[in-house]
Length: 286
Image 1 (cartoon, rainbow, N blue to C red):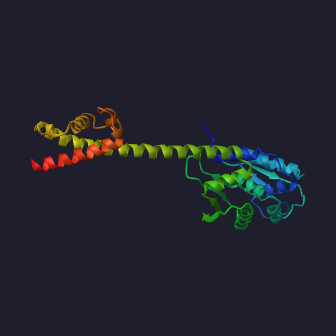
Image 2: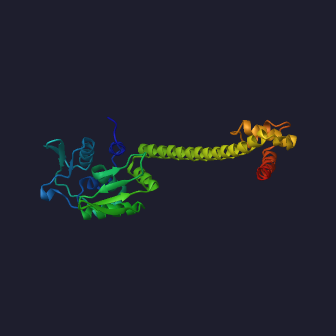
Image 3: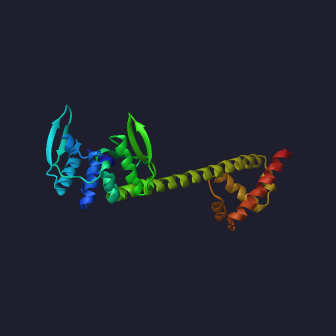
């Protein structure tokens, strides 16, 4: 089964190297969704049903000497990992935002983030566990120079972005460099497709105008040829009229190449203008 883009991004950043201790604490705060040390409440640091998120949390806690322990909670259709830690004093979460804002955002995104598929309009979001945690994630993103939007969904705070450049920048700061390249490649492909479509549509419209004008000219020329009045034309205009009827899809350049002697597009345009004026006069005199 093909992974979603969100899962690819998360799997990539879950494999990034662990940072210095302040950054590891910041990421653990992001993974926890908490704003206070869980040990006094006898609660786990992290709960997750994603194995790679749980492994990341375990590695972080081991790096921080929290002596992590994993417990499995089985539900009807899934297994939840709960990672507990020893009573080690944790730095203040506000200080972690100052020390390493991208790490806190990385942890929050790993745990409760989403990014749209690369072939769809861009949308990046984190669903905050509570309002205060959402405010702190917003502060961290502000430290990174990212201007996010906030909304509510089923009483939960949602922090989101819809600007492709900012989403790419943020993914890069979190360590998802390969995912950013994939998104940028898709942007280039989409841009090229749009450009090709515009060129094709423009060329199709131009061809339609050429053919419509040629058919209109051809009807008038054929009617006058049937009445024998086409012989009144000069030799150069008569030759152009015959080509116009025979090859209605030809451009001015192609018509000019097949005249004897060949002439430029400008000369063809001039002769066609004279031909149309003559056709109009003849039609009015019939």
